[in-house]
Length: 245
Length: 304
Ligand SMILES: Nc1ncnc2c1ncn2[C@@H]1O[C@H](COP(=O)(O)OP(=O)(O)O)[C@@H](O)[C@H]1O
Ligand SMILES: [Mg+2]
Image (cartoon, rainbow over all chains, first blue to last red; front, side, top):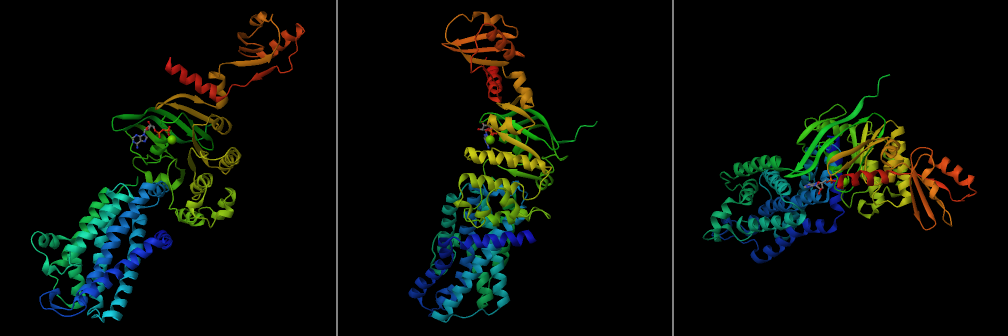
């Protein structure tokens, strides 16, 4: 436990020493917020956004999106990059347990996602006066569950991809597809043809629905369960495929 | 008298990468408290061998025991008790030197104080430097310091002086001797003959995945070093009698430079014979064979 704390603290310090990554993690969600907020405002239109204001719809979605971006991009790049450089091999040879190495990365990613989400919500409240969470515990639960699901996917990607570049490429691609089709971009109601069923199978769609359930009391159907299953499945696969070198 | 217990035993180790046989038959044992060398050219299978011993690579055949544990089953037990400096590994560029030592020291309760280690390895001034800003030699020394952070019973050093300049190399040799004086057994992997010769109590010479010789550096030199070589310069002819001097087997001449080979007290007999004939070369000397000669002799044998 002491080792995990030490490693997590160190990982967080290392993260903060990379100005570009920090900027990316914090500024990107805010940028998306400004652009979309500028376009859609927070008017209610019964046909879109499940019948609520656009920003009321989007902010929970963006909070889910933040967990997806750290999980799908930052985490795999971090893990695959460390394997590529020989850092993981160094840890392994010294007897550093897997759960410490992986756990510390995941904890760090959670802290970053949390910071970024809180900042996002604060700005959205100031600028668009969005609805605040109806159920704090519901939102926290959604944040943890989707954070865990995307972290597990990220560890899996980091485990199977050979290097940081491949991880970056695939991570950004997945993140972007989920952003567009998962419901954090155009309103899900406008997706047509093949895009609709694809959107429905993206983990982000369900993470968003779980988040909106806690935030706005919108029905989430099976989404909670699906996100939890993504976590379990990705964890099992990551555990199976994790390599040190 | 009982001999000290073996810290490492390797019998007929075999390791393949796909269909390529990197190590076909390696056997040796390392006794407690010694500096044991694994010497061989690049690609011989040295790194493969020591990484297999640490449970970092799968093993296809043979019996291996490290501190009484089988790396195939109890790699974690082994790693907790050993130190390891890998030939190829890294730390995050932005990790500071003290942070690395602090982290690795936390792996084992009662590990060494990292400030001592920094001082020992000449990194005291670099405690706050980032790993990425260190020179190759400093990174190398940091890795050795990290290998010692858990106060191990046994350390593996794989090409640890690669990238060091000659002066730092000598300092590193002194430090390796000090590691041993603290009671830690050292397995030293190197392709540098002089390093193996100065440091190792015993060593194996590995070539193409097999052990081609085993012994102390001196023992190997005596056995494979090609006997004694005596050299001097002399202007003028008429030294054909040299071949009849006792213990001399062979005389080579390159203009005024003579090389006399033989076994045993060649120098004394050659000197006496020369002086008897009124010849007293000021540069008469015996060249010591080195491990390099051993190595060349051993690999020549193979190509013949
Ligand atoms: N991971 C690997 N996959 C395939 N071949 C390898 C691998 N590691 C080493 N080899 C090959 O095995 C042989 C022995 O390598 P190595 O143990 O690194 O030698 P040394 O340390 O003596 O220089 C070399 O021919 C090398 O190319
Ligand atoms: Mg090697």
